[in-house]
Image 1 (spheres, rainbow, N blue to C red):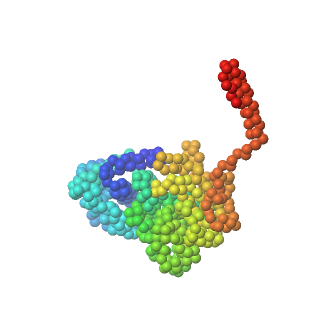
Image 2: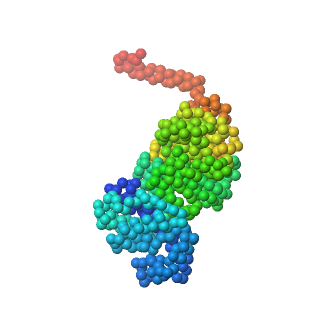
Image 3: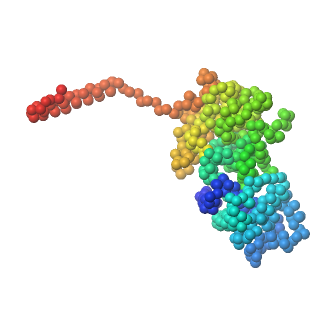
Length: 543
């Protein structure tokens, strides 16, 4: 499927969402829409595997088009279903009952069956509690099919669901529905819902252009970025993972270079977004054994895996990416002051947890790993506790690169933000500053970093290549020694080191003076000529 076709599918699904949600809040409708898209993916993937498993025994539905092949097989082979499901768990790691498959659901919707709502409820419950080898408890916890937002009573809610399922099914029929297509459609819809959610969007979505920068940076070799992309990352972690777009982008960047990632780890506090992330992983073909997403608070570090006190068992990650909430208020308690994550650097101020997130991440970074985090510009120059943390990070050689981005790139804020690239062991003894604030395409709602397609400048590629080769360019990038940074009181404000101001053109005073003399001569000549006319007319002359 081409990029244009993928975009077209996304637009069709978004138009369906926009048409059908009516007065329903966009965030609420998002959860229904994305859950149905997820069910379609699970069904397609399961039926492909079932057809391969059953071979010639896989039924033909030409005579009974209203039934799914598996429904016919289950009816004809009741004694074999348990063994078949056990085999499917080994092959695809999950089971979907025939009545819960998308084909069955779409048929109920097409005939306006009153059983649709009940069947969906049963199907979602089965997927959550019995379908997967590993538990997916609560995957649909935010999908309330009994909500009055869908309708005042069962009949109205059922009718609404029939309309939604029928339109989604029509929209998908003209397109291939492999994992990449449905995964990309899912990402497109998340982006569109994010655009409509404004400030709320920061809770769950990082624009793909920003994700790409972070992903391309952390997949490069940490010590020698010039050598290119690593062949394999054993692990990647996002401690504020939202819908998982950053983690998936890292995986995609590796796959583009025939490289791979061992396991994906994420943590998310918001329950709705946590469920979106788990669906997103599966929709993109990441097996449930290949990722682990934890629902919990990063700042209090309530994930038992990360609280391991034995250094030999403590988890560390090859790559860490994050877009945490900007300047979040938090509670830096005395107990947290003794936490291994903060003890050496001190606690971030109550008014802004930016450095608390950063210190949490770097604590779990492997010595040869790379971390890239999006933060507000204030972390570069704010004083007090943040200045002390910044100085410690610089003196320990942890801050590798500071990248300034243009304003208004995010749905959640119009302020310019920066990317900090951090390492525990880095070869250069300087800090690379990249001022990319003026390299973008202006948009109506959001500005955009260009990717070099259709003859446009490659803003994204320029940032990554400058980092990779540590290039210096006037008004764009510069390598700055720690001594110079210390002279500036450890202030990392990018404009101190890479100014985008255009130098004033030198003025040749002799040439200006000569020009003024010539102008004065011209004025005097014109005045004399004018006075001659006035004299002939008997009028007073100009002085």
